[in-house]
Length: 270
Image 1 (cartoon, rainbow, N blue to C red):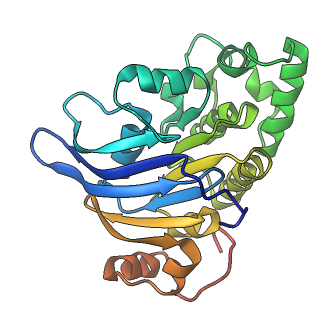
Image 2 (cartoon, rainbow, N blue to C red):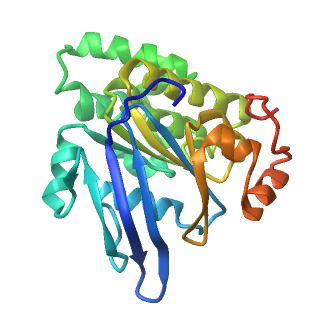
């Protein structure tokens, strides 16, 4: 791992299969994530990426169920709703939704919702927390004035960036990020990625990030998992997978992104 994360297991999935009423969505998935590690799951739309995130978060929607396999967090099984609720309450796991607007309440300002979600339980008073929020927002090119607006008053890209602030203000042990940069341009995307990498570096935060963007995957990943229609095509250290892909599907995704398998440039949007 690029940041020297410990080899202990923070999260483990063993032979997990997830199905809808009519078909399997993810088949026999096994993976581990260590503290401080960034695992990027890359694949086309409908490949099962978000389904995996929601299974890890305990947020599978009605009609979709885990039919096989086990999940462990700190070597303890996640079996019941209360197991996940405890992780959420203790801020051990956070979820960054692709549609960040849906994670905000329309009747309170962004700043107020940040305070209610993570500020009240911190050691900071309102003024100190507000200053910290302004500082972290600046990393995402959000002004203090933007934090005092209601979510629906912001552009889609601004809401997407605001959604990352929950993670940046109180870093969890594991963040689950669903296409967090999909609504922004490549310049802003890089700033968002850099902000997440900075939080990982200083707080040893692990992350599972899902994306269809191979350039973002290359920029962020310690470990890369390539998914197609719910089945793992290949997985391993990101640099090794990208330098010498073994799957035709991985090679096709690199070609679609205009990337050569041996390419080592680490600039998003280049």
